[in-house]
Length: 315
Image 1 (cartoon, rainbow, N blue to C red):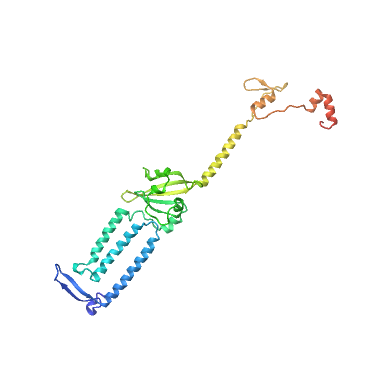
Image 2: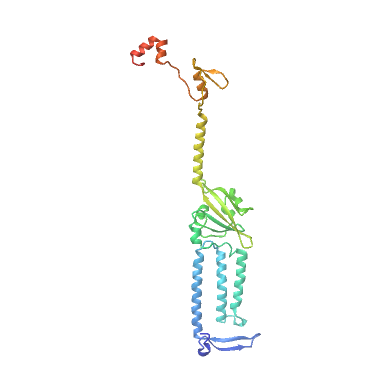
């Protein structure tokens, strides 16, 4: 329509140069098609802003201040264009769109410098981070919590919508050392978290995040629940201890035993001859109870042998 405006004047007409002010400006009157285009474009802008607001409010990694900064960046040029079209503050004889666009640049710079607007924003968060079962926590270079998944929210009792909070405030005093980044780019350790009634053991891995200039931008904390493994290891240690105790109590006899062919005494390692029961008792956990076999009973106590045989207690 602009290319053919000279023929129909539907976009603008009565274009002239106004030299009455301190500097010359172009003045013009707008045609009906221009206002149709303005309504159409502003409806698109309003719809787009509504969709952006709805989308951003569902992303928990954005804080309220970051959201306002993003809205200001988009609204300032739009507001300037409205002021220019409807000739509000026309005495200034300038296009407010350009001025407000410069203000958007200032707000953008402030957001990046003060609130790290563009730092550590997860990609495809809903499809990656939330699908991970293990708790994951993301902090920036100032130890401010930027993002976490549902598992991490339940572990630390955090709100569903992420607010900028310092890492130290969500950790117990015995875990405050995690606020220190240390020298290693990646390190791991075991840590116990959860309520006192249901403590859970986690294998924690921390990875540092750097930008293209190798400047530290943040850290990612991975919490892997190893409670079941630690319980299994404890049970295994108990079983090993019990087996070791049992082995310590067991003494075995092996090899050749020198035994007298007449008196049946056994010679020990020091060359002394010992009774059979004494030697075996000394080298094992066997205890002897003494009695008489049928032949010895008949030989030593014939009367008792005869009485017991009549009762059928010996053969």
